[in-house]
Length: 301
Image (cartoon, rainbow, N blue to C red):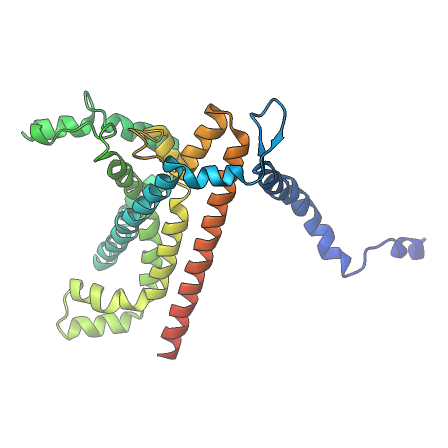
């Protein structure tokens, strides 16, 4: 009986694969098959219901000639550049302020980090109300202090819409980067910082000349996260402006949703998805190579 039981036991080599099998099955059906299906559909014209017509590379040519699709990458590039400042930069300053106040209560860290825990859709709805030109809190505050000339249609003006969304993104995610930098600052040698204080350095000098240079590797990771995360800002853009006004805040993902679900052009949308995915993968590869080279250069210095 025991011999028969031992005969059906999996080998040591097969055991890890048996544990991985459920996850591999889910990954195959949730990720691999949709990726393959999207790539295949990109070579066809299909509205989601009727006949599927092969069109070769026409969808890709159409995407490259599409002014809105091309400009959406410009918008996301501007957005990412701004978020590096208002998310990573502000997060770094907040972490510096919190660590500079020795014995500061944890309520500061909780307050700065709290927006990160809110659903982005809820954040977008609340800030859309704040930006409302008629009864929004921002214009009301400007009017209260006598700055009526500064009141704007924030989300309806092509000059301010993208910047307004960036401010919201900074309000949400600066606390996330604050937590990262705060943890990095906590790992620095206390003796080094105390020695700088004894030499007469103030907190600002300690921050810029000692703390920040010693966490360069963390800063690079934060920038990488901000760049890759910029392509995931769909919620804010979709709820607050839905690509408007006049496509001024159209980013690749919002335009993709419009093409597939509003225009019912599944094949063209699939081609856009392939191009977006390829762009992100190339960008991640380039950023990872840059980070490794910079880290290696620091190690040799």
